Length: 547
Image (cartoon, rainbow, N blue to C red):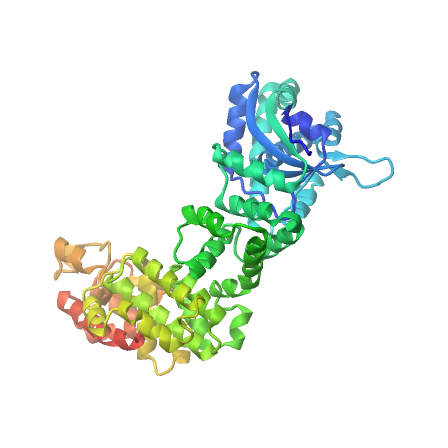
């Protein structure tokens, strides 16, 4: 029967005596500078006493070890030896060759190219090989590359400080400490399935692991003899998400995917939910297959310019753009279900528009709390996945009770205030479009080129003199009301600044934006003017965001 070996090692000896690989499906390097700083603070404070940095879990592949857990620490120590090598080489100290050959690159009798002691995953290795090991001048192309570079730079600072203060002997003392006294326990398991069990057990006993790691290792464990297939599916969908968005988005995709099929699950409960429903090999492979096949649709929900939208009515991409602009993620389970299951593309477009309207109306009225609405979106998605809702009309009837009525929306908008600039810019952009004959004539093609302007300034130069219709109480009451807000080019916004109304309207005259130009209709700016303008807006919003 295969055995699991445990051995106490030092990290220096382990690196020197082994060839190590990070498997393709493992997450990329994700330690921040603060993590690196903490490790080397601990090393500095522990020296010369022994210091234990944790357990490393590996599988024995014969001529190399594959890292199941411990990648971040091992990569960081390799970055340390790289920084030491580079400093010694820069100072023309011959020991740089010893450091490189022992810990970083081993020469082969027959091969001309040196062999790295550590190979990272497919996302990181080329950058690590060229930038860190070979010192080629290349720029990071992924977030994990930036973290590797930043970690190396921080360690270089640490190494340089030691060298400058204690000279070569101090640096050699540090190397000897890491080689001889920086302790680890290496757990060597005969196959991946055992490794994933160990990995999860360590987490249960207090090892800090991400939800993504736990889910991945659980699914791999369940895959049994179909492990390679499972690894391939995991690598494909996670790689696609990481390349298009970020590594952090992987967990969000899994959560929204799960919520779409089974109802709302919070991030902290996701792993437990998956363990309760995915209980055998076939279910694990089916789950991974579905995640892989759904990746493109999920990525399209994050990008209004995604190629997928070319095959759908333009309103689909517009709805996605609006949800991104509002930074709303709660509807994603429902969007995902609609996009994946509704066969009529016009139904998809109408459903997306209704989801936007529901979300927008709720932002103003607050009829449903954020948590309640997220739960409802997931419930509706589950109904679609269960075959109980199959088209737009059925969805509309199902969510109608959740949508604030025209009267609720209009009444709430009349007194609504804005606390976040991006929300204010979105509502005003849509209002501006309603004043234009066609959207193509609107000057707001790029919302980032305009600023949110407070007509009554947030910080007036002289409230009493420049704004006699407002005392401090009224200023606080009205300054963030929609009626007091407009859109203006960044240059005109700077010119208008915090001056008086008479000064500001000189710049509003120059604006091509209709809602800004229309402010010239007011001879003075007071609470009544703000309320009148906001009431005018309120009469339009029920048509812009229709039920």
